[in-house]
Length: 196
Image (tube, rainbow, N blue to C red):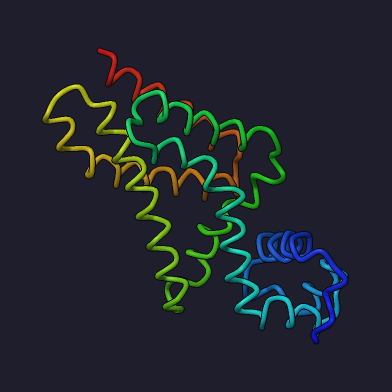
């Protein structure tokens, strides 16, 4: 019979995620993961597998904790302008609430920049994340649109908006307040467009 783990796997995953979010995949060593979690290498391997499996678990955990809650409203049936505004306002609030944390950027976007050009698994994860943002924005844009022409343009507009959002998350590394201001500007532009 296997001995039960004597540590909190959820808390350990929080620390693994923080390590990769702080340093990136390649710069995070197993020693960093041991130091962050307080666990031995063998305990980490038993709980999560090798470094790559730990990274994949961290990406999934990050998306569940950080991304799912703010995309959920955009993805809901009947989403429209209120959900678009709420999404952008939430991003702005997050960026302003902790500038030091905001300068870490988004773990998934950071991974795109670091790995996607030479790592097929990372490229696929990045593409899936980008597509999820596009689909969520398109859903809400269709709900916000007043005319058939606007509804037809929703997928194209969503691609442009998703690219802008990803750019905002990169900008946060340099200027969290400026990135938050861009969210505010986007929200104002959408309100103006859909309430004329």
